[in-house]
Image (cartoon, rainbow, N blue to C red):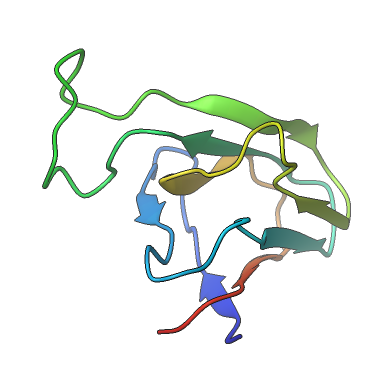
Length: 112
């Protein structure tokens, strides 16, 4: 397992990240947000391919489902068995505090 760190610099930056598809079931993926002050954020997941290789017939963008909304402090969350398996995730900065820092860390079991 290798941690993945994602940096978001703007509240308008919404980038989807695919999960590791070379994994065994059940899917094991966890997210940690380390916040040094005042910012708020959301974590969204999707069941559609975030890379667009296998586009959704419904929309040109993946459909977001909220895993965590309104986070503002250090938090750890796993994708529960009722939501898994997911195809991708998105960290959304909704309000940035001046001088504050946020680190979004993803850990997922599997290879690669």
